[in-house]
Amino acid sequence: MTLKTWLLIFGMLFVLAGCGTTEKNEAEKGDPVMGDGKKQEQKKDEPKRNNGGGIVAGAIEPKLTVLEQKSGSTLLRYELKNQTEQVKTFEFTSGKKFDYIIKNKEGKKVYQYSQDHMFTQALSKITIRQGETYTQDILVKNLPAGMYTIEIWLTAKSEDNDYLQKQTFEIK
Image 1 (tube, rainbow, N blue to C red):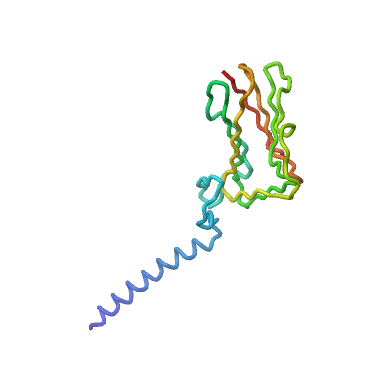
Image 2: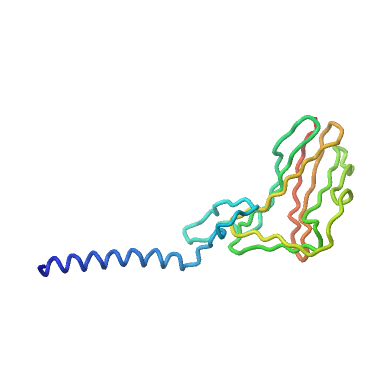
């Protein structure tokens, strides 16, 4: 082989080796790993990223929406989305992870979840990774037809924020 051929082969190997190094370096920059390949109960969303490589917002975002309304019932969904750059763990002193109150259109309490349920007296926790969403569905039924407001909050201990959300809905 000629010297030109050897230089061409050496140059191509050098370029290919450089390409592999770039991918390795990008993976070492701290990009979060989303899950471990095992089935998760929590809904995973792709995090929104800016050019700096971090998640855009920096908070746990609560959300309460009406999913479905049928005759005599309403299905709601309470979500907590981790928009921070860290894994968030909520700790609880019992099996009660959330509570809610339903008020009629006059503002009078007609139902509270925790007064109608018993909870285990065991420490528990919820862990939400970056970009993941914790979801809790709530089926409201056995109420007379009318307009109602639900207030739901997280019951985690040692938290400054209870992630309270309110939503008005109708029972037909």
